Amino acid sequence: MANFAKSNVPQFSVDVYQNEYLPEGGREVNAIVTVTATGGGTIGSAVAAPHFYTPGEGPSAAVVLMVDCSGSMDYPPTKMRNARDATAAAIDALRDGVHFAVVGGTHVAKEVYPGAGRLAVAGAATREQAKRALRTLSAGGGTAIGTWLKLADRLLAAADVEIRHGILLTDGRNEHESPEDLEAALEACAGRFTCDARGVGTDWEVKEVTAIASGLLGSADIVADPAGLADDFTRMMETAMGKEVADVALRLWTPLGASVKFVKQVAPTVEELTGRRTEAGPRAGDYPLGSWGDESRDYHVCVEVPAADVGREMLAARLSLIIPQPAGAPAASGAESVQKLGAQGLVR
Image (cartoon, rainbow, N blue to C red; front, side, top):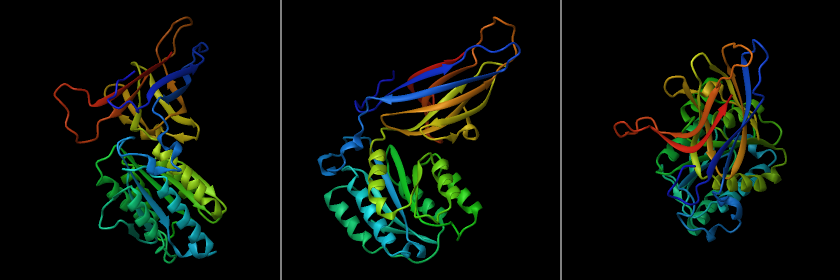
């Protein structure tokens, strides 16, 4: 296992489950890969009393909450009130020292708190200021979610932190920008921060909300009754506060003649990762797994190998967990541009 300076950082393990035997002439090898992180401590688990936390107790983090303020949020009027209450509950769940901001979203994105392109640092005073600012939120205007995401990205990029996360709430369809504009915003934000998306009520567009969460490696869900938003937002923030390691990737190396057909996350949610591969040297590629706390996830890996005689053994793939070096970051001469997390596995 890798050694880290912080005792809170989880340790990773990789377990491979497969049938190692192929029929004569068989070429497709399938494996379920379970990645588990333990020992980091779920920092967000006791956030009911956030003032008990001290800066530095968890990894440095920044969160932007994006709240739909379009005209449809006023039907019924309780929906907007529930959204304000839910955002306030999420702010209460921030641990001390976390950078945060609130964005109000319509056909444009507006900084609600703290403003001026800045992030606030969570503490008793800033939480109260943010909750007072929420009272100014009102419904009116259209919906252009890509502008919300781009503003969140600019705010999060200004923070020198390890974990960057967004929480997005919408109640309708993205009617005031083209699907291509939203897709471009998602592509621009991918790999820069993770984002959980929630659709409130019953009129939102499922594909849009799930595409946001999938593109930014977060969760997506429906909250049919706006009265349930506060509990849901609190749980989302608790989960975000429990993240200890950002930008984990699964590196797959295949021997000569073998190739990766697909990589999918299959639990706790299903996510297609095949198209997100980035090349990492000869016969190797990296697949992004997002941010991690104490948790376990399952992945389905399929590798195509050359046909071989009965009785011949071969390696189909070698797996390892790494944190890639950010693009443009300097690297020492001869040094590897990744941080290895000390967990490996073999697909035979």
